[in-house]
Length: 423
Ligand code: AMP
Ligand code: GLY
Image 1 (tube, rainbow, N blue to C red):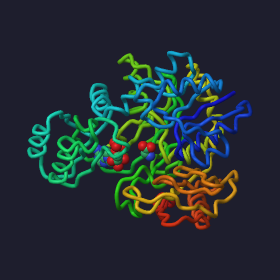
Image 2 (cartoon, rainbow, N blue to C red):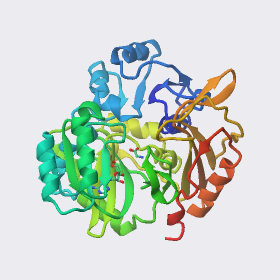
Image 3 (cartoon, helix red, strand yellow):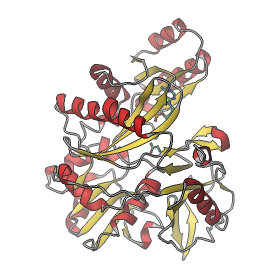
């Protein structure tokens, strides 16, 4: 079989690495890929947003199945486009991808079907949003751009003044372009965050191991929000009881709500949950795998990813038996100094270890120049380690390997997974 993976980050390296384990897979192609992916797949620097170009590529390379990593092509309708040409593809169609593509869409769905989430109000007029904020007590509040904003569209504000600034930046200054023409203002929740990955064919589903990611740039959850500086799985914060409650109150009601609305959701439904004092509550849905959660969740999946993805596409998830590794995984992101703000690229990377069963360095922003691997993005590598024993051992193994990997101005957090070690 020939497989196409769309994307070029750590998530897509992990997907390609996992697919490579299937003996029926002949060629893996990746658009655009990176230096790590290029060791296991053929990378092509094409525009993943240009669907006709992708279709020509599928024809030329005899692609049998396509897996899409990032949200943007899904929200832009890549699945509808491929299906109209009978190209098998893993992911939700454009209508279903609105679960991530529009905060207002998903909040309305949750409100209509009684799925627990933060109380909210929606606005398309800045004056109304400002009036609403001024009518509330001065307290923490969250302002979210309705549309996709590369993971930066949610601003947790500590008071009314911060929220007014966020509204002005989104609606008047349009820092997220049209994504901020409509916004959601919602209650600020507290608790541990958990990422749940549900693979569904629209009626049946399987769940992968729950993960936690670390979004802030600096230790102790300080600094700016990033795409994610590290992750681990499974998370002890989601006890068996909370897991059952999350399935009963969020996952199953969400899937039946989608069915009731006549929305055909296939692929990954990523439920971002806050474990609040009142139980699990939805922060957001995403329509794809998380990054860097994939870097820990897929190494803990013993079952074949391609078989699962094909079962989703053929609507045979009910027949699947999923085999999960009972161990622990931790992943530490090495980023370019300055990320998530301005940073330099082109730094030579040295000291990369040979990948083993329990230690894999997934590449994100890397490229090959004259036989040298150099940095080419904000997040550069995700050093992932597994342990049969406990999370502490997995984390320490990742940090030990990371200590040998060098590039100028490398930045990483030193506390990934630590607060879960002794839960
Ligand atoms: P999102 O873009 O919805 O994933 O939000 C990004 C991050 O903002 C989340 O991972 C949370 O840390 C935080 N966040 C979003 N919504 C809320 C909320 N209602 N209460 C507290 N934190 C939130
Ligand atoms: N790690 C968060 C995300 O993938 O959106």
